[in-house]
Image (cartoon, rainbow, N blue to C red; front, side):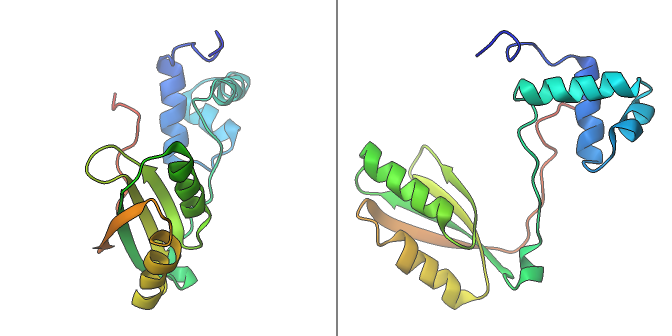
Length: 159
C-alpha cells in the first residue's frame, strides 16, 4: 500500500462520500454546492478518494425482475475438498455464471454463498445442477429463496 493509499479519510472526505452515496449521479458542482465547498476542492477530493481505492469503480444496478429474472435465491455451497486450484476454479466459474449477482467465499460451515436472480424454479434448479454441483470440489448445496432484499446503511458511520 502506498503512502497516498494509507491517507486516512477525514471529515470532509466522509461528507463527500455521504453526499455521493445519497446522490451517486450528482454532478460535482451540485455535490460541492450541497457541501458548501468549492467545486475544485470537491473534484480534487473525489479524484483522491478514487486513486486511494476508497471509491472503487462505479456500478450500474439493474432490477432483475424487470429483466425477466423475478426469482432470487441464495445458494449455500459446501465443499468436500479445499485445494486452492479447485476453490479458485469454482469461484471463477460461479462469477461467470449467467444469473449470478454476487459470490461470497466465506468461512464457516459453508464455503460459498451465491446470490442469483433467475426466471423461474427450473432455471434455479439448472444453476444448481448444471453450474455448481458439476464441480468435483462441491459436496453439498442448500438453496434459500429470497422473499425481499434491502440494502444496508453502508460502510459510512452516521455523523
